[in-house]
Image (cartoon, rainbow, N blue to C red; front, side):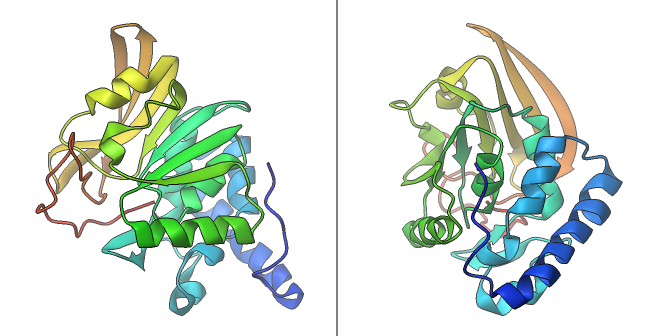
Length: 239
């Protein structure tokens, strides 16, 4: 699905907006090894500036995470692209995102796959994400409010699960809801401040293969199968 190229951007600003996106893709993504054409195309089409607060729009295409409220952030563009590429997304895939945040990563993934279900525990962020997705014409994303560590069993199985929050373990619910052949990309760490991005591929009913993708910094995964709510919530990345 392609997002609409209309509001919230005045027509006079579109050339500059497109140039900023292209610079982001070339300097932040391609230069760091992101090569998947579908991911690069999605990052070119989705307006990150629509997903940040008004006071941060001038920084929307900077190489950084930005605050979006509720102690959360919109992830650095490179992290969004890296996770999408690691998940090897294909047209028709059904994706579950944990930690919808602003909705930006879900919008990027929705350019590649058939349907994205995204869970956000902060209702205020979920409402804002729905409004932003609607405003840019992204209709194949559903935002749910709830405990992301439990997944969405009623919508399973998923071809891809992507988590924008770091947990001490892979929640058992996610393993169960991942289709055989499916890919799960998430930050893991037994302490909130020490995290590694991993890709887990389900090879069989009880067989999983794990690949380490490097060090990252994300907000902690809060929920019944993650960290408790009193853990530090001041890490670097959200959805």
